[in-house]
Amino acid sequence: MAFVVSAVVLTSPLQAAPFAAIVMDGRTGEVLYEKNADTRLHPASLTKMMTLYVVFQEIEAGRLTLDTKVTVSKYAASQPPSRLGLKPGQKIAVRYLIRAAAIKSANDAASALGDHIGGDHVGFAKRMTRTARQLGMNNTTFKNANGLTAEGHLSTARDMNVLGRHLFYDFPQYYHIFSRRTADAGVAQVANTNSRFLDAYEGADGIKTGYTVAAGFNLTASAHRGKKHVIATVFGGTSTVNRNAKMKELMDIGFGKAPNNVKEQPPVAAAVDDALVAALETGIDEIDAEGGAGKIVRVSGEVKVSPRPKARPSIPAVPDEVVVAMNASIEDALAEATAAPAPEGTLEFQAEAMTMDAAPAAVTALVATEVSEAPFEELLAKDATPTDGEMTLAAADPAATAPAEPGTLEAQAAALEAGAAPLETMVAALPATPPAEAADPTLAAMKPKARPEEVAEVADAQAPLPVDEVMVAEAAPEPELVVTDPGTEVMLADAALPLMGEVTEVETVAGAANLAPPNIELAAATVVAPLPKRQAPIFDAVAAEEAPAEANQEVVVVMSTSGGRHFGVNVGEFPSRYDAEKALLKTALAESATLNDGLRKTTQSGGAWRASFMGLTEEQAELACRRLTARAIPCETVGG
Image 1: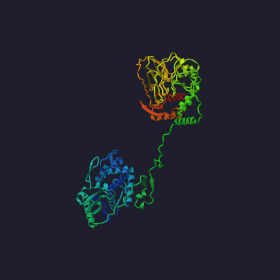
Image 2: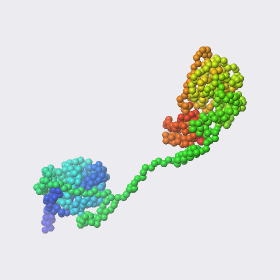
Image 3: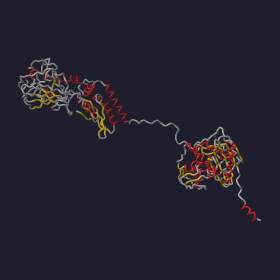
Image 4: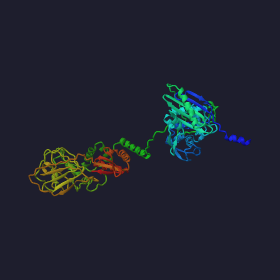
């Protein structure tokens, strides 16, 4: 008897899964046919429709792309067939996992997507259930991403039909994946498990198959004919052929009942989960928890970046030493501007005079005051009106107090005051309008020899012109004299410059009316190289060729247009233009009296920037350099 019972058990067929079905008008969601539509059954691989719905949500939210690399977890790689053949730790793009899950219904591909999004299969299953509630799938609870049989992993024909309709309307850009017969899944070429129905039924365009022993053969399908769109779901088929036949019957019912013209009513898409909402308590998974009552939301994210606005870009601070130096320079400049006038005869007085364009007048006054005591000047001062040929002596620097070096103007002035004969002569300026009368007898008596009797007159001379260098050459048989004195100012009036045949003791130039030589040449030129210190005029004897007795007089005048301002002061070399300009500014503030007329200039040479003040006269450049050196500021005169 026991043997017979055992035979009956072994030979009896397996009990078929419960059957359920539903047909909807895809345009409106109207139910056209249903049977056991709300019975909770095993959905099998129809679950993957929800897995892909969540993946599409993540792509739309920007948290995932089709090219994102997913690392396959051990859990995903351990899933049973149907499989893509993924290995633990393998990296594969999201697009390949989507193709494998939608077309081949690969369990390992679906689990890899779920683990990547939800952290693990448990977290992702809760996300799936939460999304199902948003879509109105109130009788569905998910426990994994691939649909393998698990306790509590249940759904209904109605809920799966609603999910298929949402995929069609919510993600039309991805829906076509369910109609592809084959696709490249990265590691293998995959074929669609629904190819038979897609090829057999007119207008069919998807969607997904599913099978487990507990669920039977399931299918959610979609088809279009004309203006009609029908979506249907079958649970509990006994085989692929039986399932497809049942689906054909349901589709025919739907197309027979659906109206031709109807207003389309797309469903409302589910909201994308906020990244801060991680998981819900299990109460939401229970069917009895209507609307998720009593659910607890846990915040898994934390604020890693302060929401406070960013600070404005900071401006580079000026170094303290620069600020101190600039403040000190400004204070010195203000003190110098508000200070009392400097005493006459000092370097400060000369600098102030030059900045006020009063240097010539001040120097003339000092010269008139200091040389008035010289014995030679007393002889010249006998007649109040200057006679023809008389000249005003050029004085040395009135500010010099130390013993003068031999050969300088200071040495000559000291020699004149002491009553000694000078070793060198001095150049003086002609009077503006000398009268045509004989030279002073006293002056003539001091000459070493008689003056020439022949005198040539030069008429219509040019107006006074400032020159830097004067060369006087005599064409007479006597030796020619050359006078060189940079910075001397020669005044030419309506008379010619006379020339003595020989000068031995006292510098004297007689009147042009009596002592002019037959031939005179005047030339003005710019001194090329600056002299360290002004020297006294030097008369060098130059052998001259005899000129014809009746040669006409010729006067050549060359004048400089630079005004003598071709000197400058260099204050050093710097690594950058900024440093050079900063040094010029500090130097200008420290020595504004002498550098006020200078032009600040920076030039680059050999990788370094030179800082210079240009456009100064020789006197201004030398004076400024002496004053800067006294303040421990490096200085070098340039130009000439």
